Amino acid sequence: MNSPAIAQNLDLTALNTEFEHRDALEIIAWAAEEFGDDLALSSSFGADSAVMLHLAVRVKPDIRVITLDTGFLFPETLAFRDDLARRLGLNLHIYRPVMPADAFLAEHGRMWRSNPDACCAFNKREPFDRAKRELGIRCWLTGIRREQSATRKHAAIAQRDNLGLLKLCPIARWTTKDVHYYLLENDLPYHPLRDQGFLSIGCQPEPGYCTVKVKPGDDPRSGRWAGFDKTECGLHTQDGGSGI
Image (cartoon, rainbow, N blue to C red):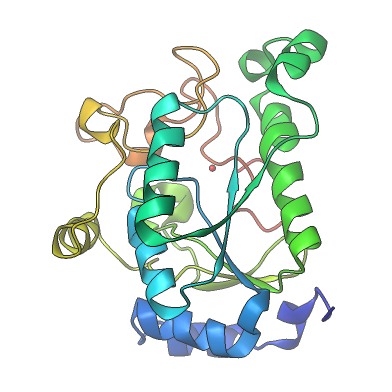
């Protein structure tokens, strides 16, 4: 297996300068050429996840798609995932926490109410880091966009993640309008809950927690962990700390 610290050997400043002038498909094509089968895409199968999935399989049809099933996802998310997997022929790798949801509840109770950072660490960050290690990933793609929230406003296209791997955000510069027209032009769906006001969709272990509807005019991430000083689960922070 190649060294997992591959990003340490790359000039991220130079990459970012270059990628700011490249479109998403060109960035993905560079990654596919550079990393081959050690490239993966992470997807939450959230509100507009079909965009990044479609872009990635256009370049590399067999790209490994890593997704997490925490045991607390909306049923609509699971159906959306399975529909897109069939439609796009996804090479899907579903990872789960070491402890199933019922056992987690029995041992830890409703942790999301008192310590959502710890809940995310157990149910999202650990299985995602395990997936990257087990699959031998050296670079992964994600669909985060600068427009989504204040915490993502200055997101670099090329980053190092908490394991030292290269993380690329090919559609970081895309606007909501860009996303909408790409979906229309390619006959792709939004997540079915988007029309109900859920603009950023993660877990909902119980109503009112972790994912709620977004008020008109608010940024999409405002519907996550409402009432807590938290807008990220940690997959998109360099140290893996609290931070989707």
